[in-house]
Every structure is written in C-alpha cells, then in structure tokens.
Length: 540
Image (cartoon, rainbow, N blue to C red; front, top):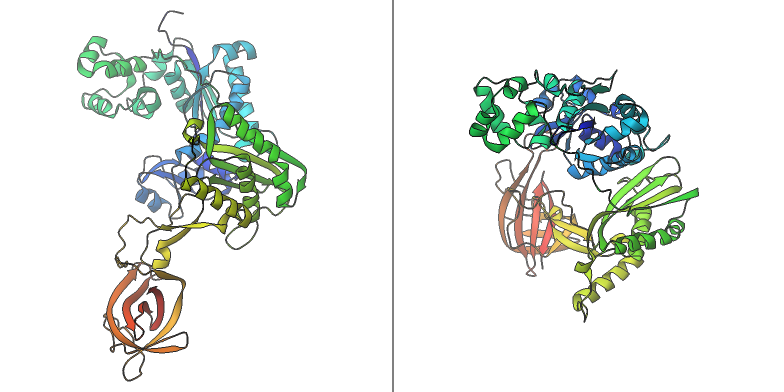
C-alpha cells in the first residue's frame, strides 16, 4: 500500500445514541417510553422513534419540536452519560477486534483488514461485531451490560467514507454496507457538501467553507472534488485542502486505537441475595480494599464514587457519592451502607430495592493525582482534624447525620436555606444567580422556619387585618398573636408583593410580606396569603 493511501476501515454507528444512552441508564427499552428529545442549547440533538413519528427532527428548535409533539419529554444533553454508557459496548468490540478508536460517543472505527482475515471477510467480520453488540452482556443483562439494537456498519477506504456508508447505505433490513476498494470517490460524489459539517469529528468545523462553496454553486462532494487542488489551497488554505481530499475519497487518516483504561471498578455478586445492609457492607470490605489499592497502584485517588446496587428481581439503584478529600476503604463501605439504608428510597418512602441485593458495583466517577492528597509533614492543622471528626460522626449517625448550610435561589426563605450532607456537593433546585423578583434583600433574618408558623394580626379595633387585591393593607396592624402570646405591634413596614407563575392558574401564587416589631423588641417577617397570616422568619 502506497504511503498516504486510505486504509480499509470499519465504522460502527449507533443512531440517536444520546437517546439510547438515556434508555440504558434508566434500564428501560426505547420502544416502551414516551417521545423523547435530547436538547442542547434548545436544539434537538437526538430523538426517539416515537418523537420522530410525530415529526421531530435533529436540528429543530425546542419550541418547534414541542409544537409538533406536545407530549414530548425533553432531556438535557449529558456528554458524560453518553461516554459512560458507550464504554462497555466498546469493550465488547475490543474483545473480538482490538484496535478500536472512539470517534465520539455512539461511533467508533477500526481497521478491517485483521478482523476480515480472521472471520473470513469484511461483511462477515462486521456481522460478528453486530451480533456481539446485540447480545451485549448476555441474556438478562441490563443497563451498561445489555445489548443494543439498530447498530449500523459501514466499510470503505478511510473512516470518513466508512462513516457515510454507515449513515446512508444501511437500513434496518441490511445494517452492513460495503464501498468497494477504490470506489470511495464514486460513492461520495452525489452527496451534499453539507456532509462535511455532519462529519465534524473527521474534519472539524467547516460551516463557513461549506456555506461559501454553496454560494459558488458547488453543491455536491463530486463537484468539490473536481476543483483543482492548487486553487483550493489558494482560496481556502490547508483546511480546504483537507476537506477537498475527503470529498475525493482520499481520507489518509490512520485509525488511532485507544489504549484501554485500567480496570478500576470492582463488583461483588451475592448468591443467595442478601437482605440486610450490614451483611452487604461486610461482604464488600475486601472489594473496597482492592478498589482503593488499584487506584493507589495507578497513582490515583477517588474523589467521586459511583455505587450501583442490583436487586434479586432486577431492580437497580445507582448514585454518585462525593467526598471532601478522597475515598478510603472504610468510606466506600459507608457509602454502600448509606445507599442501602436511605438513598435507595423514593420520596414517598417506597424502597427501590424490594428484594435482596444480588450485586454491588463500585467504580470511580472522578479521580485525582494521589500527590495532590498527600498529607503535609505536620498535617493540615484544624482543617484535617475537623474533617476526621465530622466524618466519624457521620459514619455513626448516617449520611444525613452531619449537614452543612448552603444558599440556594428562590423567592421564599425556606427555598434559599439548603442543608447538604457533609462531603456532598450542593445540588440546588433553583439557581441562586437567577433574578428572583419579590425575593427578600439583605439583611436576611437569622431564623427561618422550615414550616411557616400560623399567626394572627389585628387592627386597633380588634378586627383581622388583610391585604386587598390592589396590595393595600386594610387597617394598621396593632396586635400580634403567636403561639398563644398576644403582643402589641410597636412598628411595621410593608406590604411587599410576591407574585409567582401568574401565567399558570393551577400553580399561581400571590402573597405579601410585612415586617413588624412586637412590644418585646423582636422583629418578625410575616406573610399574608389569601387572608391568612404566617410567620416566615424571625430577626434574632
């Protein structure tokens, strides 16, 4: 083979991979769920077959997609999820044909010469890989170990042409398409120059160049390939020459096999399944020691830990745990026990794992260099002692036994007061940085009641005080009744309106805040809503 000549390549394409990755993470079949669209920057990047049947297409704006399919379930794009769910499938391919290059999650390439000689031909090799991917981890496997349907395979000279063969030449009936040796230029010729944008992993960003070609009347790859290379270089530079060679079927890129990452995860299967959390925790102690030792041998420590629990009836509980420093074996065992005892329960209290635990899998979600976590010669002082003390208390009391405060967003003080378990990252339901019209400015009250305290406010004549539809107080507040105590009001200020979701009649909320100072000098923050008064907070 002459230097720089295209290498026969096989590209495996997983259509709509972001949607497939989401279904695999949720351990549910694609055809059983609602219409789903994965969005990035309010643009559809992938959609399910049910959404496509309603007219949703890749590249649509969010409002257009929802207009076509009002019941569309919108999910944010998650590159980490796509990569995490794609890695086990790449491992399945590597078991039968080593030397795989991940072009992007949902698409990989490899040289076809070796597998073709071993399996008796290019098409035979592709079908062996498709069968392996369809079976996945075998019968009964779910999630990351389950198989995947609908994978397409393209074989051609160079990864770029093989990718187009997988996208354009394959179908449900025949998922393998082969472009004959030397036929890449003829296969690519009728394709639109916009193909150079779609194959962004191969050619980079070429939107400006493709737009210019279209304005020059160059519509197809064949027309672009017929242009003189010297003129292309003069007009478009080196990037244009690169795109020109791809359009002519002269993709000289080598497939760059990835170096498989070290196996850092650990799994423990229980037969028969264990019912008690302490039994499971005891059963994974050796695995936790091996997990930390493997990381240490690679010069790494785990800062985020993924724990996956599987029930004897196929249930699954998965969670990522954080650590203020790095995980040791004892803290790994604690997280497994906590997840079994409380994190594996739904909000209504129903256990996710309704049967015994049959498998525990621990894997590093994020790692760091061990050198960054080496203790100083004289220790880290009060910070290190504080961490050890709080970690020991948390190990005895449970995951939510030690909480640290964080400030969230929202109009109500109870929403802004967020308590986070020690070591966890604060996950805010409402972002603090967003504008919240009607929220209380600084200085904020020192005591915020988790549940507002019912109170009564009366006028000098003893009549109840209310706030009308125009936001005006009906009478000056004079008496304040709270918890059986009746006190005079020395000063008051307000009211200030709080308006929420005025466009939604079912969830709309309208209330007013009033500040008062009672006869004992205590300041209160009151809320009047629909004629009822509550104390939201107190200025201690």
